[in-house]
Amino acid sequence: MIQVLARYIALFTITLIVLCAMSFSLAYLFPGDVLENLTGITPQNAFQRDAIARQLGLDQNYFVQFYYYLVRLLDGDWGYSAASGLPLLEEIQIALPATIELSTYAMFMAILVGVPLGYYAGIKCYSTTDYTLNSLSITTYSFPVFWFALVLILLFSLQLDVAPISGRLSLLFDVAPVTGFILIDILLADNVDHGLAIKDALSHLFLPTVAIGAITTAAMIRITRRSVIDVMQRPYIAAARSRGLSSWQIFFRHVVRNALLPILPLMAIQITTLITNAMIVETLFSWPGIGNWLLQAIYQQDYPALRVGMLAVSTLVIMLTIIVDLFNRLIDPSRDRFERGTI
Amino acid sequence: MAQFSLYEEEFHPSPWHRTWAAFRASHIAFIGLVLLGCFVTFSIFAPLLAPYSHLEQNIDGLLIAPSWQSSGSITHFFGTDALGRDLFSRIIYGCRTTLGAGFITVVLALLVGVSIGTIAGMLSGVRSSIVNHLLDALMAIPTLLIAIIIVAILGTGLVNSMWAITLALIPQFVHNTRSFVRNEMKKQYILASRLDGASHWQIFVHSILPNMTEMLVVQGSLALSIAVIDVSALGFLNLGAQAPVPELGAILAEGLDVAYMAPWNVALPGITIFLMVLSINIVGDGLRSALRKRVTH
Image (cartoon, rainbow over all chains, first blue to last red; front, side, top):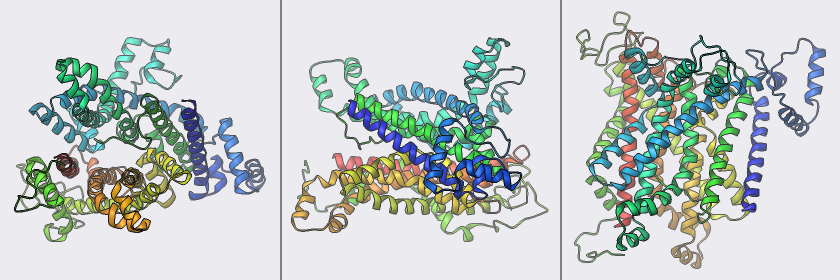
């Protein structure tokens, strides 16, 4: 147990250092001046330039430079955005939680809707209900997310007028970002009507969450269904049936928990898809998240922002993946390390 | 092995024949195959099938409605876009770009992924462990992020976005090949050929590869649907194919400017991408269940 934990911590640290090295090398790979890519500051004269270069260790070899880079990352000195001139750490602290919030709700939707439906389809396998659910999920799964979001906007915002088309909260509410999560921030703010503000925030959240969540839900249904069908064919189910247990007893005692085991590692793969989809959908709904921020950065050629944005997003995704992996290993030690289930 | 009448049958179907029979038994899978066949035909014979050139602009016919609307005309089946280009021709060429780009990325990723995966599967110990862990980490980085970085370094363009998608697809091929090879290496027939003195390369070519092709076809079909969605998503975000190139996502993004006046410019490319991905998914799904049926029976 402690050995496994140590292994994963070592893995995480090594991956993090590799990512930092990649982010550092981007300063050299991106077009433009290395110094500007690293800091986001355009030096006014040669004197200032020398001073900054000495501070970054640019006169020494790459390893020393990388060491200085790591120290600055840990100090929270991530450089300044070339487009807005603001400190990048602050910008990311506002943008990243917005994406996490959106993805969390979409994941909740996928788990709350997808897993039960998957169980249902799995138990009723090869029946009409199963075929209907399966075709529905494969259809939803095939939607390109950007087009699906556009259709939702067209339907709910323009035709039915039940949800706002873009943004995160009506400008009437003045909520200061404290945690970055809009619903928590509203509860923390004391100068707004909480009920109205939450209602407004939820109406803004509705469409992007559905757009991202629907695709993950479809994937979840397929994963769960497959897993349930596999479990139902095991000998212990036949044994339970021959002992005379009712199908409900078999389901609750033997199927539910065993079917969950292969779902978890596949969920780890879904996290990546989910965040990619969230980043795309953000641009359509002008959601102030990290995807929107990164795309703005690339349109404006804001290289310092891309350098740390890449680091922040990949760290987040890899951290989540490793945590799910570790959790999976702890609850199911019998599983081979490299084994993954199929859909 | 419950092969009851195996030796009494007149005709002994090969594994591929049996997979094909199981595949054809599912009507939905077959319809998906026909649909995919249409898209492949569109892609290969685009210059013959398209009524107009994909770049030909017609100043007199801007934003003509599709032919099934009362204001539309049959000369332009899907209508025209804001520059007077025939949408039907653009979509046919778009299928060619999107499906072709997706196919090339999948083949590249498959070649690289299978090579690395086989090496990682045959090796053991520290080297294998490093490859595994680094790849698992790489697998987690979203495609869009890789694409953004590659675009920032090399500039926008269809080819650059294809590099990004290839990079993002490689890890899953490596992962599957590795676990497959590891499992096969434990089996007796590999041991037998090893006792015969076969080298690693001979074991791979003569014993493992023939067993792996089916797994690779299924994986490839899954990867193709991801690749098509990614190519069009990057085109849509203006990071992939640039303006005059007929790429379905880029056509959709161009149509967004005139979405109120000419909604078909957004709807039709979107439906095309959707149907293309759907047909690939259905075929992949059908193949997988056909293989599963063959293996379990």
